[in-house]
Structure formats: structure tokens, C-alpha cells
Picture 1: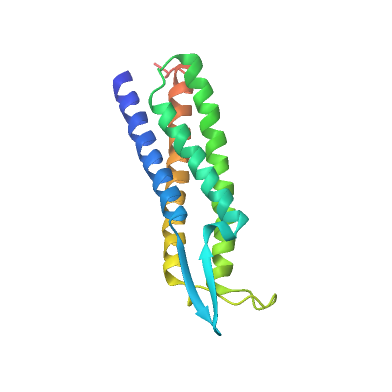
Picture 2: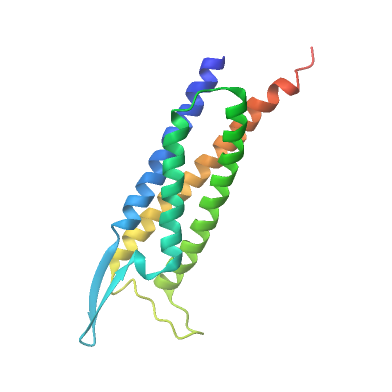
Length: 163
């Protein structure tokens, strides 16, 4: 039973690592340029602090995910990992929220502020951002599942089943 729990945890961590790594790579490689009214402008993730925060948060989660794959399963370390998993899940959630807000303005604009949508001019950039956000959202969901499973594994011995 303990081996099954460990395998499931490793599988969830591998999936979360893959999702955060791909979100980071896709967002970093998102760039496009367009010419509007004889003015050339470039869309890049570096142009938005929210996208920079997203890349940094996803990269931190990637490194953390890789490190936790190689840690031993001692009870004290496991409890620290559970706490750090919650922190990483919150970090991912906040970065996705920030990046999604900027992406929404890029896609639809804001008529009240006079901001025009840019996705018609730089579709490659918007497609990359969308892909990165989907991968990041998958990573956040995987960390949520990992948190729930880890809590179940840690709390199960404290609440023995009734005979």
C-alpha cells in the first residue's frame, strides 16, 4: 500500500513538473511582431510585468517539482513538502490570475479605457500565451490534487477506521 501511495505521488509530481516546465517554455518563446500604420511593434512576454511574474512563478514551481522528486520520504521532510506544495499551489494560482487578466485585455481590449485588442495583429503571440496559460492551469490543478492526496496520506493514520 505504501508503495502504491509513493508511485501515485511521484506520478502526480512528474505531471505537475511537466506542466510547469512546458508553461514556462511556451511563455518564454512567445513573441510576434506586427506593423500597424507603418509602425512596427513587438509583442513579447517581457512587455508585461504580469507575464514576467507568471514565468518566474512557473519556473520556481518547475525547479521545486524537480527537487521534490529526488527527496527521500522521511516523515519530517514529507510534512515540509506538503506545506511547500500549498505555497507553490498559491503561487501558481496568483500568477495564472495575473497573466489571465492581461491576456484577456490583449484578446478583447477594454473599450472603457480605450485599449484595443492586439490578438488580431499578433496571433502567434496570443496562441503561445493561451497555450502557456492552459499548461499553467493544468499544473495548478495537479498541485491541488497533489495537496489533497498528500493531506489524505498524512492525516489517514491520525483518523483510524472504525472496526
